[in-house]
Image 1: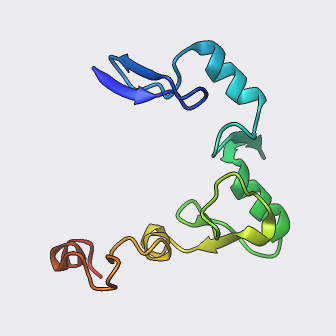
Image 2: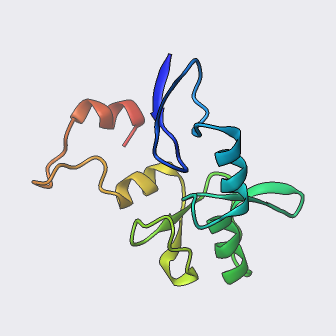
Amino acid sequence: MVTFDCTWCGARVERRKLFKFCSREHYRESLRNWDAVPYPRIWYQGRREYLHRVVWMKANPDQTLTQDDVVHHKDENPFNRDPSNLEKLEGRTEHLRAHNFWRGKSGRRKSESIDTEFGF
């Protein structure tokens, strides 16, 4: 059994598999309301894309965006989809560095073994 919070209402749910919502109604409602879900997906050019990636592509038509590229929210607020708040980062490693994932509050590395494992 998996215990999780419903993305829509925050209710605690226990199920055999992770669904992210406590009911089908909340899932359907989340599809209708983009402001309620942090990373909604839409159909764009024949495929499902995250809305913030489409916003970035529309704002930067001269630049290409590959599947490996990450569109990062500068203020770390997933609901702020303003083009000036979005930036393209090349790969997941750069995205983790943007969040300062590998460093503690002191600025020192958390683990040297992680660096060698991922080839930094």
